Amino acid sequence: MISFTPTEEQQMLVDAVRRYSANDVRPVAHESDEHCGFPEDVVNTGWEIGVLPGNIPEDLGGFGDSYSPVTGVLAYEELAFGDLSLALHVMAPALVAVPIMLEGTDAQREEFMNLFLDETPPPVTAAQIEPRILFHPHRPETVASAKNGHFVLNGQKAYVPLADGAEWLLVYAWNADAEQVDGFLVRGDAEGLTVGAQERLMGVRALPTFPVTLEN
Image 1 (tube, helix red, strand yellow):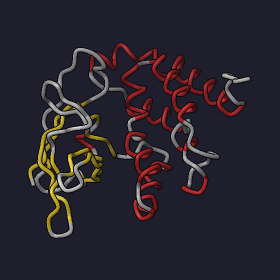
Image 2: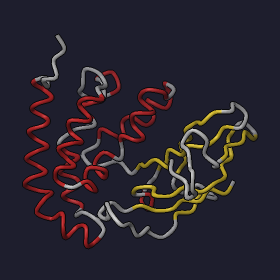
Image 3: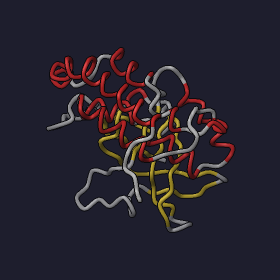
Image 4: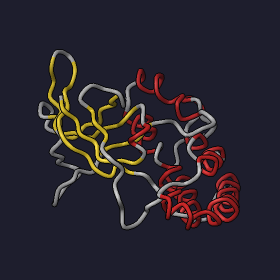
């Protein structure tokens, strides 16, 4: 028989996140929506609960037995009970951590996974969506071209969360040589990378998002 009952560890996490959402997030959700951002201490408290580190296996520095999408969904649901913007804010680093954890090279895991074990959210984000009608994630117009042992990226991204302070961006682009979509880790201060003004959203206003342009 299939059981949908959370494990003891999962239930403890759900209870902790639920208390945080009720006591810390909901009281400031409206004000944060008006000011287009949550207070830093509220975000940090959410990160300290350890949703992401608890989902990183011990052999990669975390304190989880293995990666579990179910654990992430349970925690995300409780965060969204407090505010969807805050849930996206706290879980945004997972958009970078999970691809590196599951698909990255050993060298990339060694270099980057420690970022997700700090006491404060790491300055990383993912850039996938593009500012055009009929955008499809499996065929982005952002292109990566091999040149002198590296890749050169050109294109535009939109709705990139927390891009203004990101030290690393995981940019999804069309690899013309391999004829597939690949993720590329790009430094936030890389030459040719420009972060535009904060976007004005109709919803999810408390999560700052930005357009990003990549030119060579």
